[in-house]
Image 1: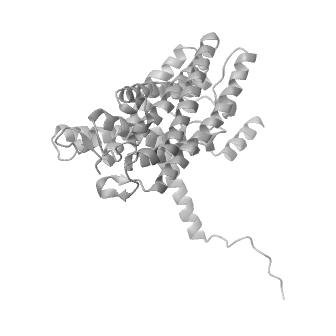
Image 2: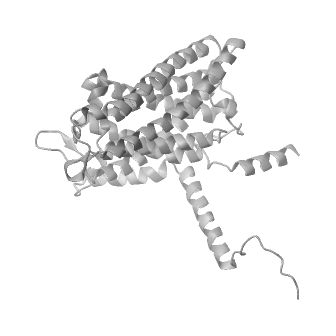
Image 3: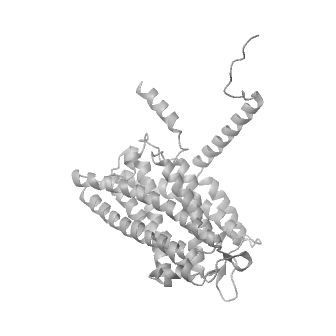
Amino acid sequence: MKQQMPTKGKPMLPHKKKQQQRSLWSKKELMNYLVNHQIEAPLRVITAIVAGYFLGLPLVDKFMFISNQRPDGRFEKSPWDITFLMFYICVFTALRAVVMNHMLIPLAKAAGVSKKKYQRFAEQGYSCLYYSISFSCGAYIMYHSPWYDDTTYFWRDYPVTDYDKIFKYYYLVQYAFWLQQIFVLQIEAPRKDYRELVLHHINTLLLIFFSYGCNFTRVGNAVFVYMDLPDAILALAKLLNYSLPGMVCNFTFVVMLVSWMYTRVYLYGGVIWSTFTEPDLYVPEFKLDPLNGNWFPYFVKYIILGLMLGLYILVLFWTVMIFKVLYRVVTSTAASDVRSDDEEEEEPVEPVAVGKPRENMADLTKRRAANSN
């Protein structure tokens, strides 16, 4: 009798293999289409919705404006919040491409930025603009709220199911921005800390989802503010590193470091401590009662705490990277992009297409080996 050779697994049937290839190809085609039409594709959706609004079509306003206003003028959550998010994901996609292509890449050229850094300059310029605006709005809301200097108000009066107009716009626009960042993460040039960035995005989106859906938006407002300030200054420091390295860049980096340690490490650490200790003292009752907006059985406290700690671990990871750059600032002449130590250098990107689908790291290595030969 002939001995049968062991097999590692069942061979894939030809028709299944073709289906898989077609599926992968269709996903690749879709991504390429979205990358190459970052302005046109979402703009068609935006134009259709805006035209429908001005034509008086029913329900179209639910895409553009927040919904579910009460007789007293305050707002509650609504299923129409989903359409609002979809619309503003399109807005952010088109806006990012327009700002990068027609404002920031020309600015990079005028500032004498190296051609291979045009893309990075534009990405960080857009981040600097967005985070500066979002921090300003969030800080304004927080400053005029009782939880500005008293973390117990994160939990007092739970559940708080109504918001004023500016707060609901702020929270949903932030949510839409972070949802749109999933697409951005796929088209930005690859970094060695890509996995950490993916974890950061997943963790952030889960925190936003739970905080809005389960009525923890007060603490969510604080976390947004504490995260946005150092992000804005960090992006500015990177812009200066690409265009004006030296004293001003180094000073901005030091300012970013101070803001990072104060807001992300100290203040956000205080939010985590508040989440661990204060709900037991100030939440009226731990129970699950969705009809009355109560999504806070006791175990939910530990879900929130776990997500916050996961984000804090990533903050500490990047804190180590920042001090690594600080060492270079002290021992050399210029600060570097905090993540550029761990970036894969990209070939020059033409300004006509903002971003490209993220290349598999193995394919990137093969391409570079072929180019070197």
